[in-house]
Amino acid sequence: MFSLQNKKAVVTGGGSGIGKAISVLFAKQGAEVHIVELTQESAQSAVEEIKLSGGKVFSHACNVANQQEVSATFETIGAIDILVNNAGIAHVGKVETTPEADFDRIMSVNVKGVYNCLHSAVPHLKTSGGGVILNMASIAAWVGIPDRFAYSTAKGAVMAMTLSVAKDYMGENIRCNSISPARVHTPFVDGFISKNYPGQEAEMFEKLSKSQPIGRMAKPEEVAALALFLCSDEAGFITGCDYPIDGGFIKLNN
Image (cartoon, rainbow, N blue to C red; front, side, top):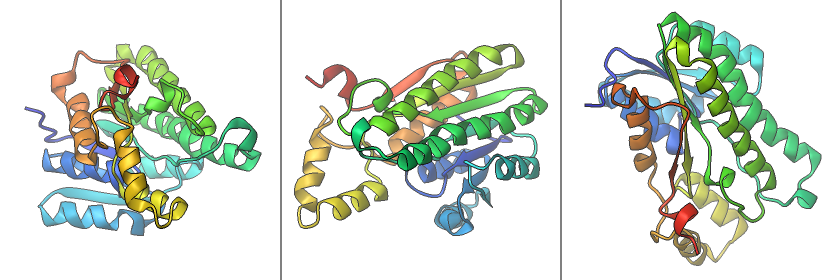
């Protein structure tokens, strides 16, 4: 079950964190994985791990916020079967503490970046006779999270784009879903804690872990397992859905 043999998958932001876990698992399940990262260096660790285990992988340096770069990258890759829109950046701030430059930066990567990849990928999916798109949303699109105004706005847009694409391309055998993780333990989280709470790393890690009712953060590999299912043929009856993977955060956090 859940084989991706003979499938070609594009994973944006596939060089670290959740994206790396998805890239590694998809390659393990037989997919030819194309990692799209801002630089080749950013993808190097994932590429080496996949090659070491005998997987097929290629990396592409591309700024997803730049439509010309995205279009050229997808032309190089050609017909595909799977697109995982995972690339994104974080931001902390309320509406009154979010400068215009920060808001524009979040929108350019987290919203326009997804649009650019969808715009370029859909024709290539149609060339393959259909396929699957998986967008990375967030629980921030579902519930109010303190100091996450721009990030929540962007992820709400990602969820809306998911529904729109699912509706528009259902007749062309293209499925589109999204995943909404709660906090996931990635190197980004460790860096965020050490930068913003020096000397309080252990205390803050514990506090952030306990904000999920289940009592811990998710592992990137757990998100990757859900991504694998949704991109596999076994999920062929699923489209236009968002899947929280949140340790009970949305429904049980009271």
